[in-house]
Image (cartoon, rainbow, N blue to C red):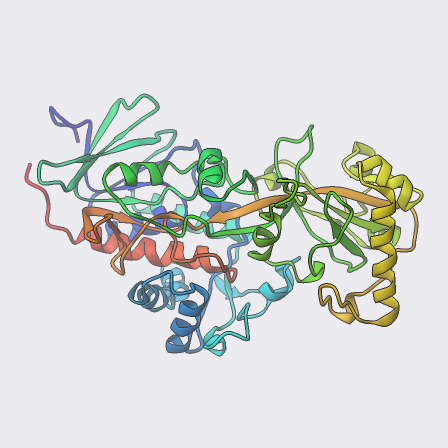
Length: 486
């Protein structure tokens, strides 16, 4: 529909077509609203499409609220957490009702993050026994984020909800009353779209927003997700007076970047005979216990004497026994999945020069630019821990203390790599965007990774669960707004 002032009109305009945007659009439509979705990319799907597709469940919602509140470190309002748990507890039923096939998630799929394989990633935290097993949506492939996205997109299409791809939102438009009443979109801002009831911001995080990373994370990161996540929604929200929260919260892992490869590739180790070392050739963490928040803590370290970050990049070093055990690169999650498959025996990557090999530790150190005596001292000390069955430096579990004694020896550069960012506009329990003075920005809602409830400690499976839950909350409440006058 077009008027003299507007190119298009709808009750609810959804900005972003990933998991959160799709859930918001479906819910608003089913509540009787006319919906338009605008999406920056040419395909849609956001990070949901390239995710692991993990959906949280709860054995006891009261305990799950307590557990989530503890993980958020007091940085998230309790009523927001309560609304999230109450709504996301119905994620599986909602998917099933809309025709999706939901099954328990095999823990083996969560590779490289041992604590993430458990129902509760942090069993020592109060309320952890209230967390249930994860779910995934199944389909034609083993890529469960893709199957979840296909299910969501099919439901959007079934409802005839218009989705304008390659149409980035540029800014939000205010009414004379201060309420949000429309969106300017298109590459050159050529479209004005009326939102009679509300706007849902669901445009994702800032995994590729280098300026935002420098300002709020203190360094630039690589990222596994879609390159369209540059923080557009954050800027649009701030422009209309939104408060921000959780801007330093991320879920990060280690990844690989190579000069002749456009995409960041995930790092994984199926075998425990490996170490992480920094630019001084020294260990800095319990390697097998790497999880989605400790990478950020470790790699953000700034040496106060040299003013260097000696862990960016770091190195994974391993021996021939580990090389033979299986792939050390993963494209199960991330955009690289669409373009590259790491070889099972790692030989293709050795031939490409992505993996550096040498006949001795001293030779390897020379090839990758580390001090040979320092690296050798680190290896020797670690071998002493292996012999003793105890790691006094970082507490690595005894059953993972396997020596690196079989040449050739190998190394790959490791870069801190974002799975998602949590920061963005603050939201309340109704998924309304909250202004800097604490009041809602009228008729503006947010969902998903944009202003996530999670802060610095991420338990895995939280963002997909939140995208579906807050998408429904935002879509339902936006659709319930009284229409603006014509």
